[in-house]
Length: 408
Image (tube, rainbow, N blue to C red; front, side, top):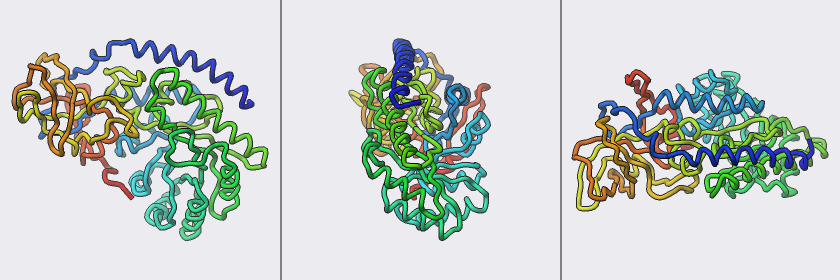
C-alpha cells in the first residue's frame, strides 16, 4: 500500500473512530466512580480492581488481534511481573520497558521478548541486563536516535557476545527523543545500524505522547493518522535504499485505544490502558467505570475550606497527567467507606504527605477513608512497594511493585 493509499484508508477509519469516541464522551462520567468499601489496611495504599484490570487488558488485546498487530505492552505503567504474565497469557508477545534495570526484572522473570524503549548512549548501561538476556535466551530490542547511541549499542553487543535488535526512534511530534521522519539523518542512522556488527535493524519505533494533549476526538485521531503516515513514508524511503524494515511499532494509550489501528503498523506498545486514569477520562477514551486503580487514603484533618487526607505528592505524585499534560487538580475523590456517601470532590493541591480537598461546606468525618482516582496512574503506583489487588469476591491479595525504583 502506498503512503497516499494509507492516508485515504486511515482517514476513512478515523471517521468511525471519531464517532465512537464522541459517543463515549457523552456518557455520564460520574456514575462509575463508586466502588465497594475499601479493604482495611494502613493508608495510603494502592488498590487495583481485578475485574476492571482484566477487562481493560482483554479489550486492548482484542483490538490488537482484530487489527492483526502484535502487542508489546509497556510495563512502566504497572511494574508488576504478575500483571505482565497476565498480559502474555491474553496474547501479548512480549513487553516494553523503560530502563535497563526495569527490563532486567522482567527478563529474570522469564519474559521471552523485551523492547527497551529508552535511548542508550553508554555501553555500560547494559552491563547488568545483557548477561541475563544472554543466559535466558531473551529477545532484546532497543532504540537509537543518534550515532552515539548506535556505537554504544554495538560496543555493548560486542562486549557481551549478543545480538541486539535496534529500532530507529522517530519523533512524530512529542519533541522528546527521536529523529524527525523527513530528516536525511534518519536514513543514514538506519544504514549505520544495519551495518554494525552485533546489531540488527529492527525497524521504526515512535511514541505519539503529544496525543495526551488532544483537545478533541478529531485531533486525537489525526495524531494517530499522522504518526502512521510518517512511519510508512520513512519505511518506503528505506526500502527504496535497499534497507529492509521488519517492524513499525507505535505506542501510546490514547492513539491505540481512541483511534483505529492503522493497517501498516505491525506492533503496538500501550501501557496506561491497564489502569486508565483521569487523563484518559478527560480525553474521552474511557468511562469512570473503566478506572481500575485508585489510591485509598484517610481524612486526617479539616479546616474552614478543606479536608486533609494522608496522601500527598509522595503517594499521588505531583504529575497532573502523562508528559505533564493533564487537567485541573490531581485526582477525583469519593468516599471509600461503602456507606452510600455520593459526594465527589477534587484533590486540589498537594504537600509531601498531605492532600488538600475543598469540601464546599460538606467535609467528611475525621478518620473516614476516601478513594482517589489519580490523573496519572503510572506515576502513582511507582510510589508504592506493594499494591492491593481486589478480587470480585471482595477479598484482596497484596502483590509487589516488582520494578519500583528501577531508575538506571
